[in-house]
Image 1 (cartoon, rainbow, N blue to C red):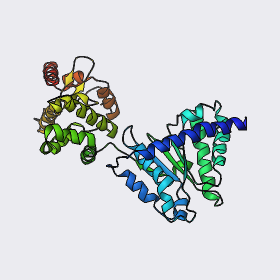
Image 2: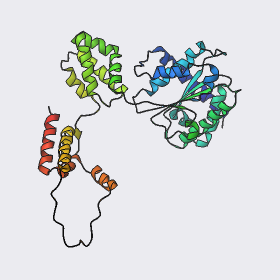
Image 3: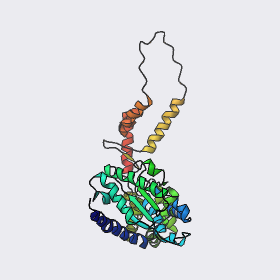
Image 4: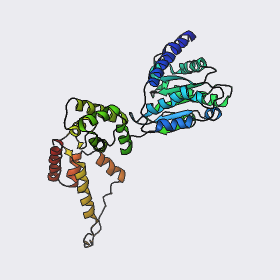
Length: 357
């Protein structure tokens, strides 16, 4: 393996691209209405000897829930704000970003991962380093990378003569991170925003908010935001940001029924749709189910006992078998089985009418 080739990869790809990315990150103002940025800064705001005992963060969550925003707030503090704290060395952290795209561009054999990762860490010898890891594939190279990274984290923590290595891993979940690495990182699990978080996020969208005030009046702003919050249960921050941007454009182009337009921008539809011939309204389905449950609770008339014995009793299906059977049924089949075919068809027709307005 050519050391010059590895050094060229480090300088031309990893370091250069990381510097460009940091410049972009530090030049924009990030929204922290969800609060994770301030929480992570608070965790990092400590004397150097305490921070050194911390190996990093494992930030997990679905796409669009704010993982990168949270990580970038931590990166910004380590690379710019930490030098103002109680660090006796007064040195900021260097920062590089690393993904499977970077690794697999040069590494074809997973056994070469160690050489590249070791060379990257040696490149920053004597300097405090924040290594941001994201989008690591679940393949041989990705697994070997995580395994080797765990070894390096342990080594850097044990040897005080080495400069501090702080790792930030961004992933959808923690299942692919080996325990030797997972146990040394602080887990931060980010969720889709609740109603309060969605409202705060909408109020932080300056362009959207100012446009609503301009076209609908300031008194309508809170009411509109509240309506949108009620319509967007289950959306992520990035999806909510897209909805706000589209709504702003719609208003500026002369659109009138803003709520109807927002419905068209939702990443999902409120009714349960099936590919056969069903569009069943779940709320009505639940009402019907509640009625059936109430009826089943009424005591049944006592039936006369049979004087003869049944030769063989049919075995009752297990809970797992029933769950599998129900899970494989379409919405139409489930409604027909619960009520009747005619009632299921009525529900389908009503669902279609609701969808068509």
